[in-house]
Image 1 (cartoon, one colour):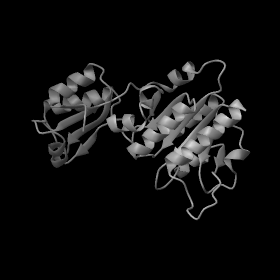
Image 2 (image 1 turned 135 degrees about the horizontal axis):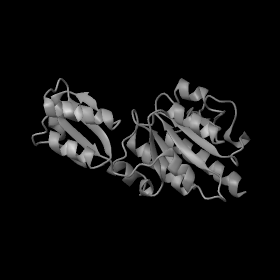
Image 3 (image 1 turned 180 degrees about the horizontal axis):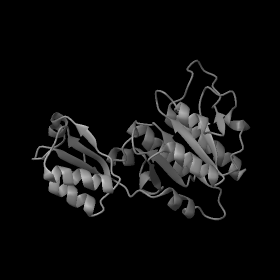
Length: 242
């Protein structure tokens, strides 16, 4: 695992210096004044951490981790407002929202398709999401160094915010009877892609204005999420440049 900082003081200094933390792991049951200082700093910084067995930390690093290991973010994250402000005036906004996509290669492949299709940003969750690491960047062919990425504390609240900005929120699901070709993608659109196993969560699905499917002719009932995203993204392109 790359971009690791470990030890109490180095991790505290990294947070205080404004380094973006991808993941923070703290040993279960860890105590002491410095550990308390770190947890207080996390609280003030709205930084979540995961309590794990010491064996996990020992596997991650060989040095004296003192019960804490942080993985620094491989990219610079932006706010949702930043993404919206960067959309050129002559373009219709297009954002891809990830609800539970955890496979790094799928995430990278979707990011690549999104950048090629002219999407203006990606939204991922703080929890239950593929890490934005070197493997993800490689899988995206560098697209994650180009397209803005926002980490949201709540996908539901983000979708509500986008709807307030005039976006239609579109769920990709093979269970829908409405096909992607029957939708109007010339409007500002947030395309929601669900997890590899369970798809889009019920709570998020309820917030989507449209539920759309890619038509299937073969015997296998669904596409890989990255393939489905590519098909949908380029239907958006077809409608907008047509």
